[in-house]
Length: 111
Image: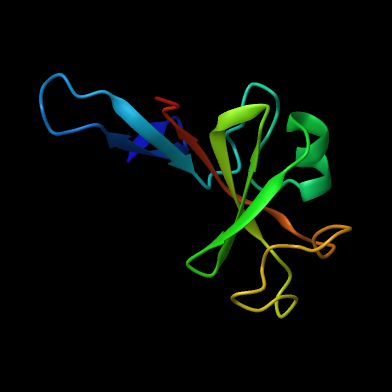
């Protein structure tokens, strides 16, 4: 965990050697944002406007999204309580339930 002022970021390194590099960054801190303005707490509609259409997938009973415009950026989403069940989180058209928001932002190496 690394602090940037009052904000925190989880940094995952490639290995434990002296030459290790950052491989993965993650934050659920609302005070941080990406260069294109994506931040924790934003609505899914706002994310679509900032980084383009989202592709959704479910993992470990959580809903995640990505955009082809930002292949190294991952987004963990919240959905309103009781709106969807595990195994059925990937939304069907037209979209997610109202109230879905960004819960966590991930930045990982594209290599």
